[in-house]
Length: 343
Image (cartoon, rainbow, N blue to C red; front, side):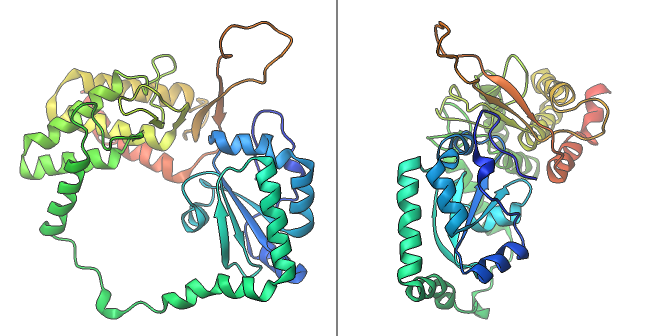
């Protein structure tokens, strides 16, 4: 199923194919390179590219005439996303008809994208053999993996090394991990809570508590609709990007529940209850046992004739697809620990 920006665009006029053998067979029969657009439902730059570059007449003409364009949503095909994603979404990967990688770019405005497409078409038509050979070379150079390079078994030294890395990234001022963009990093919280339970070092629990408190009292927590945004552009959690994924809510529910069970402090219980309320109110229609994929927010198209002070309010947009992995994590996060909330 192909989906595009909720705002006005003409990206559907590109002759998109689904990912699969048929698309590559068509590319080989027509001797055309493949271009794979990796997108996310909630991705603002993906939406912008739909509205600009992919709505441009010349871009559409070039893609339809000289390429086999394939559109892939990262949540629907995580295997394809894992293989081709380069620095986030959108990733535009150019491949040979046989599937060898040529190059990848991220969001590109119309004029630079037209220039890139024209150069690729020219190179493919003028010196196809060299281009195909260069695409195949990295795989050939890699060679077969050596048996002596087997990974060491997981043990206390490796766990200690990972713990040191996580501690090194821990932000003692604002909580969380890292000093630039602040992602939720719920797995790091899980890891430190595990170490606290096994080793008993209070510093591990202390950093998770500090992180969860800082997040809850910041703009990364949506005080209006509930739930947590995906990340913040500032280290103090005060500049969130307006998308809330089910997967993140499930992971944070696990963090807050586990911390409540370890501390018996009502703050963590109340936040966990709020997350459950958010899932039921915003990511469910009440008629199915599953949760929707995410809540995104988009700005409406501007009416230039109307007078306005300040930016228009964001509009909520729900991804109503049901993702098995995220729903499984939501169920796992709230059971059996959730029984402790109502004991």
